Amino acid sequence: MVRILSHSQETGLTEPGTNALGALLADGKRLTWVDLYNPTDEELKLLSEVFRFHPLAIEDCLSFVPNPKIDDYIDYLYIVIHGIDAEALKKDVLKTHDLDIFLGKNYLVTFHKGSFRSIESVMERCRKNTAIMGREAEWLMHKIIDTLVDNYLPLMDGISEDIDEIEKESFEKPGAETPRKVLALKKDILYLGRIIHPQREILRQLSGSEYPIICFECSLHFKDVYDHLFMLSELIESHRDSLNSVMEVYLSSVSNRLNEIMKVLTVIATIVMPLTLLSGIYGMNFAHMPFADSPWGFYIALAVMALLGGGMLYFFKKRGWW
Image 1 (cartoon, helix red, strand yellow):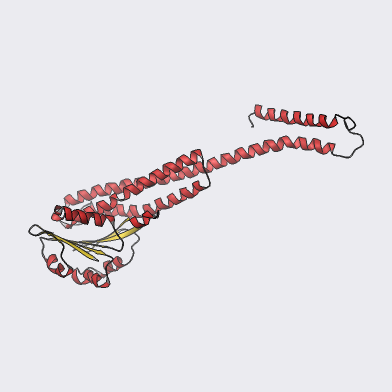
Image 2 (cartoon, one colour):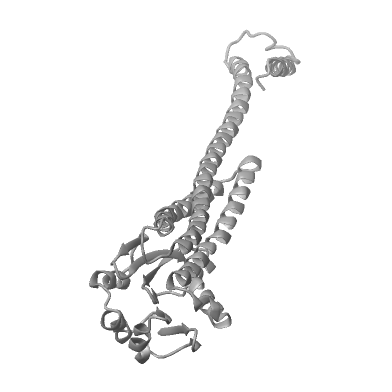
């Protein structure tokens, strides 16, 4: 599917068909946004035949690029940036998908195979407020990337809440599920780190006036987006340290519980040992043994065992061993 938004001061916002693209791109006073969403093979020809993008850039569009990147082709910039897959997130699966962007002097081309909330949001805002497309193409790209980065914030807030719950659980009542939860969150955080760290570098380049196609004023706005990504990057590092601490607390708690159990079992075994010795001695088949012929012999032996066990238990408590 191909969606086109075109804006000029004379005609305002229009949504022409693909047949008008050549004339639209030739008009230097008009800004044209072409969004390719799951395009067909015929629609893909627009990239090579109309825009004449480099074959390597088109090849990257058609394949999944695991890491964000930016390439300067002099007349245009080719940018790959990753956003949160909202459909996968509904199934509690953290996944990102790539958004390919071509930034020219008077056009912006976005290419994506999955639904992007940032694209849909900015496109709807452009229809309601045509002034958004009243400036250069880099400003429109800024709106898209800024919205895409903002979509990371609710996800990070949710991860922060999950970490707080696990920390509370690890202190109060750690269970067998605690390490599984920690490892699952750690996996998500490491995954986000592999995306956000290179993405931060791209925003640093866009905000550093390295590319003439981006004006100085717009680069300052990209600096604001860079700051958001930097904050997210710092949160990721903080969350990773927190999860490491939670795992250490969990292991320490389990070790302490094991020590307590072993201490109780040791005390019980130590008390039972002399009682077993006495019962073993009186179980031997000798003719002459103390109290063997007394009608109170059995009760005397039980009393001695009880006094011995109680005395040992008192001794352990007094020494703080139990």
